[in-house]
Image 1 (spheres, rainbow, N blue to C red):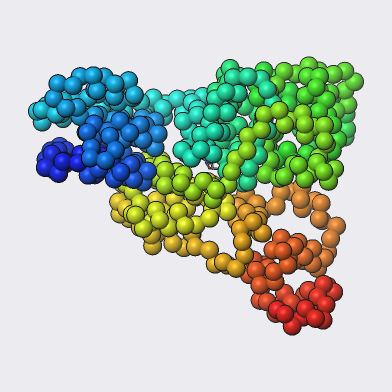
Image 2: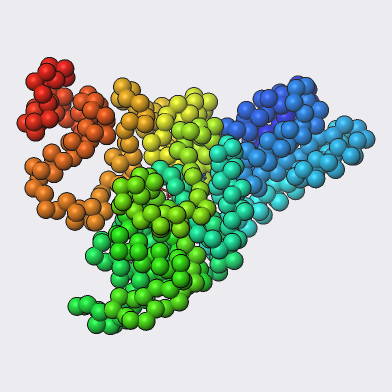
Length: 477
Ligand SMILES: Nc1ncnc2c1ncn2[C@@H]1O[C@H](COP(=O)(O)OP(=O)(O)OP(=O)(O)O)[C@@H](O)[C@H]1O
Ligand SMILES: [Mg+2]
């Protein structure tokens, strides 16, 4: 059922209009002022907004602008104009309103306009869905957020998507790096060819070269035929090298060679092959540190760093949380065919108080779960409470990187990581891991124990056993 927001500072008119719309079968919410409207527009998603142009506080043009920014790209706005002022209505349409209705318009006619606007919205929605099915539809509208941080990223994407330049995307896990790589590809002239996505962390070192660059028959035992590498698969398309920080030094060299000369060499081959592919790379590691520690080639770093998109963590752009949450609510409710409409105010407040170590991915997961489990039309604070409360408040956010533990993706360490540590005994592994955690928590034993899920005394005993604790420290725990 379509949801309509009615904005009017005149109570009598607003009420009458709401009753009219409710009788016609719509879900209706009302705002008595521009400020109220803007607050609601940032909390829920509407199919249609009807606003008077003359409001007590903020004028209707601002509400229109805000609706266009904060709502889905298909949300329509109808403005109500004063008697005989066609100019305002035309101006509003120029600014994206679907239509304007003079104040003295009769009920029946109003309903017809509304129906038309909703039909237009539905049509646009299905066009979007259809294009999404075809796969080529991802565009800048899929990057949700209206904070300056996200708007700047969106501007940058729009400016560079059409070019062939290499792009480096940096950001914590779940901040949208993969999404952006796909958006860039789909906005470029290369969109007709599939994007080749390669997760460097998922390919063991020993296989990386042959996977990336291909091999010829007989190159090594088991190479019983010639095979194209993934970069070659991306010829005339885009190659997305995810977690590039995990690429082995030899492959970094080969990649640099490719970026400079447009040529690759299959394993076991003598002649180079020309490949024309655009490279987008991403990582959640600090490449600058890796470069200084010499685990990442300096020249490759500079070669990749032509255009860099820095994604800030969600906790640094919390104003985006309500819009993101409400959009995910809609999407998942739609997909599951459930009549879940919105979050209660308290639920939204709760979402805005959490610091989202897993960023947008974590937020989306929380919303998806809440929609799945919900039985009513609203999601209340108690429905999400369990997922968004932090236990240890004793440490600051920067000191620990809980994403390693929390992110769905990192629960199972990639094969490659396991291969690297497979020479350790279980005992050694435990020691390494505990010390690693302790370092991550900046030596705070209380937090370390909590994160490891062991008692403080146990931690203390183990540290003592490792010879990490001096006798003067042993009482401090
Ligand atoms: N600004 C955004 N608007 C809409 N959806 C977003 C946004 N940012 C992230 N998402 C969604 O959140 C989820 C996680 O994003 P994505 O997979 O792109 O993160 P990532 O940075 O690649 O994470 P990782 O480092 O773990 O690979 C995806 O479902 C993505 O569509
Ligand atoms: Mg990713």
